[in-house]
Length: 171
Image (cartoon, rainbow, N blue to C red):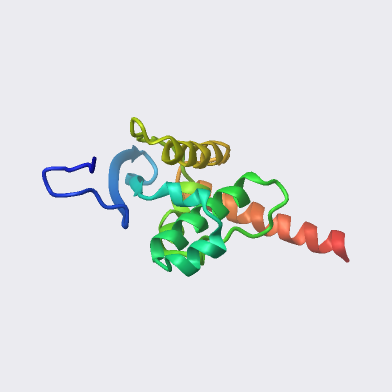
C-alpha cells in the first residue's frame, strides 16, 4: 500500500532548513556612560532531513545509482557528525554540502543543539538509520558562550594567545 497525504504521495528528495533570528535589545543605564544598549541574538534552526534510509547504502554505489544532492548532503552530514564527535579530527568538512554549510552554527558553532527525530511506524530500516544519525549528533559537545562584545574580545585575545603558545612550543 502506498502512503498518501492530502498533497499527494510523500517525497524523500528534499531537505528543509528554517532559520529564525531573534534580536533582544536591553537598555542599561550606566551612571558614567549613560544609556547603553545590549544586543543578544538568538537563532532557532529547524532542519528536516529526508531519506535517512540512504545512509544504510554504500556511498559509492549510491552516487552511481542516484547522484542527487540529497544523498551527498546526507553523507556530508554524517561525516560532519563523525568529525565533531571524534576527538582527533583537525578538520570538519562543513563545506561538502549546502546542508552542512547552513548547519555550521547549529552543529559545531556557538550553540546548544537539540535533535528531534520523527520515526515512522513500520519503517524499520529507515528508523534504524535515523536513530544512528541522531546518536551521532547527540554525542557532539559544544561549549556555547553568550555573544557579548566583551566576551568576544576576550575569546579573540585567548585564541591569539593560544596560537602564540603553540608556535612557541613547536619552535
